[in-house]
Length: 252
Image (cartoon, rainbow, N blue to C red; front, side, top):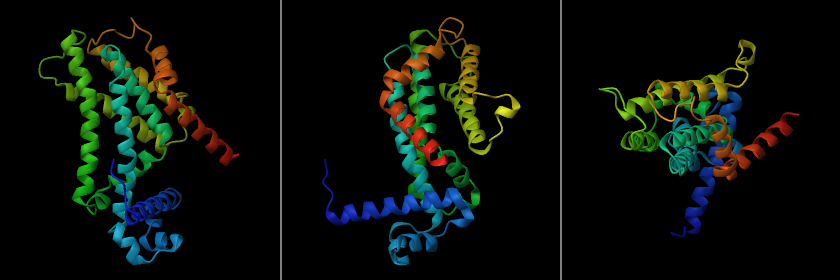
């Protein structure tokens, strides 16, 4: 394990402070309310100090997204290692995604801002590459499960369909759902009382359509997901519950 020098620790701590202030500023006042000058003023840093860490506010947004993507990759790898049949490991990934959303409730709002071309084009190739690396690693975790299912005889993909294409279907459903959740407060009004459950059910139907066994008619995946959250992801579930309780107290 590498020990950081005092100067390296100071740099790390300053960067963490910049990101924390920027996150709150971005969520409260939006992209146009975020500026290097305002962050520097809030932290009582000089502009020179700010630019030693980040070249522009767009770099800060990407750094915020990358920080949570790193933790998402840890969750995905843990989920993919769940000791059971491949489709049950997919269920563990679903639990992991939901926990990630609960642990990082503002991630998808930040990612929506980041993916605007006017923002993305101003970010550095190094940070973009890191984001792509995290995404490809997450896809690799899930496509590896698909390949295990094929090898074990639980799944046969139609001709011309790759494991990555199946994963893209799951990813699209998940990303779309989380994007809607991050921007809509009226789902209950249109009849969607439990969007996370609805997402899990729709993804299960997709996998049933591919004939991935055990089918949802043969196995209680909802009960399995509850057990995975309670036992396998006990630490993450507890952290998410504490975060929700804190948010409720702050809004009371």
